[in-house]
Length: 572
Image 1 (cartoon, helix red, strand yellow):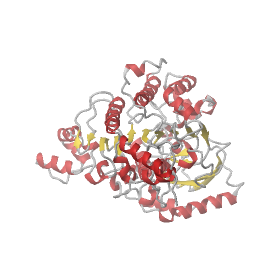
Image 2 (cartoon, rainbow, N blue to C red):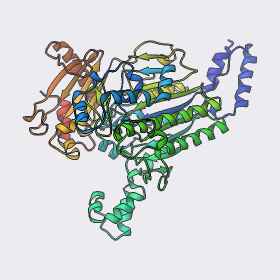
Image 3 (cartoon, helix red, strand yellow):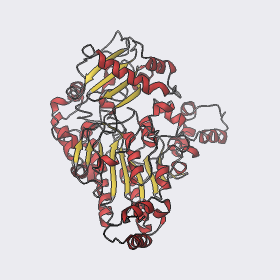
C-alpha cells in the first residue's frame, strides 16, 4: 500500500535522529519522500522552537491583557485602604500603569491565545514549579510548602524536559529553578575549614560566625543545588540560574552555571538572564538545531526595592517610587521579550516558535507589590482564594495558531509541558494530571481538557497585605496558619479551611472551627457570598471529588503532619 507524503513525513520527523540532522539533509529526506509517493505539494514541517517564559509572583490584575475592562471598584477594598493610608499613588494610576507596562506581551496576546481561567497547582512557588516541571499535582509527592519541595526535590526521570530533549532538542534552563535541595556539603566543608563543629546549622552559623556565613553566602550556597537535582541531570543541556525562592536584581551571588558557581552577577538580572538565553538560542540557530528554553525570571519577586535601570524606570512618572519601580521591573521583562522576538524574526524562525508566558502563583500584593494586585480576585500568594492561584497564561505560535482568541476553558500551568511535549512529536504520558492543549490551540478540538481542579496546602496570610490582620510576624504566621483545600468545577468553587486558632487574626479574634464555603465564582470572583447552604448537593459533589483525588496524597515531607491530617480528614 502506498504511503502519502504527509504520512511518510510524519513517520520520519517523529524519529529522534531527525532533529540531529542539518537542514540540507532534512530537505533531501522530504524530496525523497515526495518522489517516492509521487507528490511535491506538501511543505516540509520543521519542529517548532519553544521558549517558556515565567515571571515570579506576577498577579492576575497586574497583567495588562486582563485589564481592558477592569475597574478600580473591583480592586480589593482592604488593599486599596492600605495603599491610601501608606502609599502615594491612587488606584487609577496603578490600573493605567498595568495596562501599558507590557506592550510586547499585549501584542502577543492579540495574536495568540490567552487563557483567562488558568490556575497554578499551588499558591507557593516551589510546589507550583514542581507541578509545572512534572505535570503531576505535587501533593501526590508529599509537597505542600516550599520547604517540602526544597527537601524532596525532583524524582529521577520526572522532569518532562527529558522527553523534549529525547526528541533532539537543545534544552536550557535559565533563571529560577527552586525544585531541588541545596548542597549542604558546602556548609560541612566551610565548618571544617574554619575548625567549627559540623553539627552547627546554617542559621546558627549566621548568628555565631557571621564572617563564615557571609563567605558561604558569597560562594553561592543559597542558590546551590545538589547534583541529582541539577537541571543538567533532569533534561537540560545547559543551566544558568539559582535554586532559591529569589535572587538579587543586582550583584547576586546565588547564580550557578551548570555545576559551577557563576561568581558575582554583573548587571540587572532580567537583562543578564535574557542575554544568556539569547546566546544559547543563537548557538542553536547556527547549528540548525531546534531548541527549548525555559527563561524563568526573578521579577517580580521580592525584594522589589532595588531600582530598575533608568531605561525602564523612566517610563513611569507617578509620585510613588514603589508604583513606578514595580511596573519598571515588569516593563523590563517585556522589553527583554521584545529583544528575543526581534532576534527570532531576524533569524526567520519567529513564525514557528512557540512562546508560553505565565506566572508561578498570584502576586504577593502589598507594599512594593502594587495594585491592582490580583484583582478582581481576593487574596494573594500563599492563600487559597483565587488571587493566590489564578494566573496569566498566554500561548503564541504563528504557525500553529490559526485564530487568536481568549479562552475560558479551565486549564492549569501543569498543562504547559504536556502541550510542549506533544508539540515536539512525543507522546504525552497518560498518568499526568497536566493535559496537552495542543489540539485546542491548533483548532483541531474545542473540547474541554478536564472537568475540575483540586488544591491542598497552607492557607497563609504571610505573603501579602492580609498579614496586616495577623497578630504574628511574617515569619511566624505561616507556622500557625490553617490548612485548606479547594475544588473548582464549572462555575463553582468549594474551599475547606481548617481550624484558625484564637488571637491569630484580628478579624476573627476568637478563632474559627473548620468550615466549608461554596462560591459561584463567575458572578462572585471575589468570593464574597457563601452559597453552601443553598446548594448542599453541590457541596457534597465537590467534597467527593476532593476525597477521590486526595486518596494518593502523601504525607508532607516537612510540613506539620497534624495540619495535613486535618486537611485530609476534613472534619467539620
